[in-house]
Image (tube, rainbow, N blue to C red; front, side, top):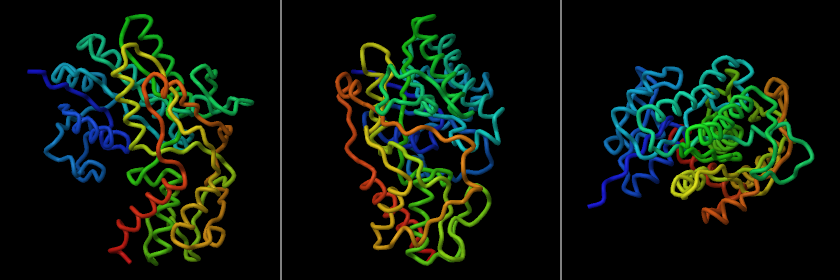
Length: 340
């Protein structure tokens, strides 16, 4: 009888971690997920996974906690999803971002190297490592790394360490250079979820909308959503599809880094229009750019060329921005309808 594969997911409560857990469970894996120690027991993204996964307390800033999980479970595959994952927060939390997002992956690599060296590792990289690159419309695996914010720089360090551990120790480590990927499980710190939740609040007449990242209501008294640079552009895909690419990387015979994107580009204005159109409202009546929400530096416009992933892994995106915003708006309408 074939032995059940064991997968460890750091950051299982995140958008990506929870979708990845869903996928691996369907494939028959035993799934271990790490969570940070907390008195809270409510974790919305994995409430449906209670009793289906094993949760272990561990933190990317604490080497011993990672060691103990690796020693205990001896995973076949390790997916390092955990991070300080909000680029906008990296300016206000630069030290923490460095500790978690840059050094955290190295702690995972070291734990695997010493205690479970045959395990295959997926490291969640980000298109933000290419944030300052100019003159390149379609990024591929050969695009030079040039990050321009603390989050991107931390991710760039971790990404370069992926190659270092492959070359230095012969470890099976892959880096997924994922362009922006969204879903109803995205946190309110991210613009697509702010848009979809704001649309739902306005459509339903929610009197007490959620609070945004600067401590203000997501929708003001005039039914306006406050966002940053409306002209900023992104390559947006569906997180539920992107986790399959993570899994496919670890099934490939050779460890490599792959760009995962949709090879499309839309502005925040475009995303707003798609979301408000979905409920029959005019986005221009309900969205304003707020200087308090602008980044000190903005990443350059770039699309993710996924052709290598399609050729070698058989992966390609199926859901694009307009459909994705509709999915997210519908999910937030369902979530908030009981509060109207």
